[in-house]
Structure formats: C-alpha cells, structure tokens
Length: 397
Ligand SMILES: [Zn+2]
Image (cartoon, rainbow, N blue to C red; front, side, top):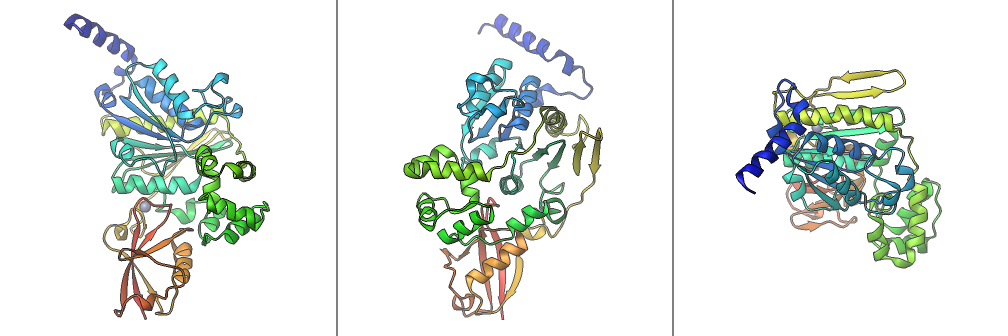
C-alpha cells in the first residue's frame, strides 16, 4: 500500500468507530490488539461475537463442535436457512468477516476440552457461552490455571446471568459452588462414574433410557463411557469411531439433551451486558471496573440484580490450597482406590476421578497402604472438570 492509501484506510477505520471513540475513556487501540475466545457459538456466542466484531476487537476465536439446526434460527443471529447442517464456527466466521473486515476470525471446530491449549493462551479474555455445568467448570479451571480473565454467561428461559472471573482477584464459579450450582447438577456431579459398560447402562436407565448390555459395550468400544461423552462429544467423531452404532448414539443423544427454553430478547440483553464486561476488562480500568459478583437478569420482573460475591480461600480451583497448599485427606491403609474415588466425587463434585501415584494411574482395587511404607501419600486427581490435576495429600492411619 502507498502512504496515501494507508492514510485513506486509517481514516475510514476511524470513521467506522467514530461514535464509540466519543465515549469518555474509550481506547480503540486496546480493542484492536485484543483476542477474545468465544467458547460456544449458540445464541449467546453469536450475539457476543457480533457485538465484539462490530466494535472492532482485533481477533475472535470461535469454538464450537456443533452444526446449525433449524431451531437455532430464532435466536442465533449469525446463521441463515442455507447454513443448516454447516459447522457453526465456520458459518459464524463468514458472517463476522462480512460485518467488519478489520476483524480477524479463527473458526475452530472441536470439543472445547480437546482443542490445543494455545487457543486459550492466545486469548486476552475467554467468554464462556456454554449450556452445561461440566464444560463451564472445565473452562473456569482453565481460565484460573492459565491466568486468563473469563466472562461466564448463561441463560434459561427468561433468566440469565453473567459473572466475571479475574484470576487471583475475583471469585471463580466454584468459590460458591454449593449455593450457586443447581442442586440436581450437584447431585449428578457428586456421583462416581465407574466407567464400566454396566454403569453406563445404569446411568442411562436413571435418565429413562434403556440400552442392552451389548449396546453399552458397543458404546464403550467407541470410547463413549459416560453420559457426558454422548451429550457433548462431536457427533462426526463418534460416528467415525463407530459407524454401526450411529443410530443408537443419535437416538440416545436426542433423548438426553432436552431442549431448554430460550429467547432471543433475553440472549441479546444478557449478551449486551456481558460484552460490556469484556470491553471493560480489555480497557484495564479506563472505562469502569468489571463487576466482581454475579449479575442476574430477570426479564419478567424487568430487573437486573447484582449479587456481591467474595473469594473463598478454601476453593479447590482458585483458593490457596489449589496453589501449593494441597488438600489433605485422612484414610485408613486398607482403603481401596475405588473408595477413595467415592470420597473425591462427594467432596469435590468430580464424578470421573482418576488417581495418579508417581507416574501410574491406579486401578480401583489397589489398597492405599500397599503403595508406600510411609504414613502419607501424594496423589494427583485427574478429572474432566479441571485442566490440571488436583494434588491431594493422603494421611494413612
Ligand atoms: Zn474459586
């Protein structure tokens, strides 16, 4: 580009953002050099990425593993009829590019927990727009452990909420898990999943879905060991692993994922609030402070409520013992690994713990006292609810 062309380009860009540049404290250059990762491109993810693109955030990473469906079109602003069946992240990226050519967009198709960590590390802010607690818990842990600010957004029917998590400064979503995570989610998260075909069949039965043991074994062979795997693994990947079980997987998936009530107007309202929280975080103080508690929108009562929250030192994601000061459990020497897993599921709401001692993942029937002659053990707990394992010290009696 010649010097003249550059200055024309610059003045066009300036004119594009003219009205927002007039907001006191606004710093467009901070938006331009920022990257926001949008985790989940549904109603909230579409709205928020649209807002950030129009306002000129430099780069958006859009992550989703689903395809566009007809029932998305009443809310998800980036999709059209002709997008049905297409990847959400790809279709959304195209529309974003049309809206603002100054924004770089990176569509990523895949499971949020399995995409390369570099995408999270590259982000200035992570925005969680997911519809389930297991993934929100994982994103929360990932944000805390990578030191990235997280804006967590959720909605159901006429209610919606936003929480900013600034690692080391504000509470995380697990600091008050006992009060804020819905009771039925807590009960499910506290139940140990043993990962045998019969347990998967039992879990499904509790959800009112009957599969034969043979079918459960089929699912196991395809790597589907929990209800979570069926609900949230990318369908394409599951079908590739197990073409013959495709119909079964799809049938169970439809039964397991009840459609939640959702409204575009509520999505737009809460997304507007969440977008401002992201913008404030990116402004680092020149545009007001991000709110450190929970913001709740009740559309029927026309009310936005702020619920102050404080950090919980005992939090096992962002608290003191998650960083060096490990948790301590006291167990009898003949406690088996399976019994320990049950305690961990209850205490930390980790339904799928795997226990590592030194470099080995322990089998269920191993007794803790067999592992060492000492009276304490250092163990690492792996779970799909965390990025890195939780370290615990077990005192043997
Ligand atoms: Zn916390």
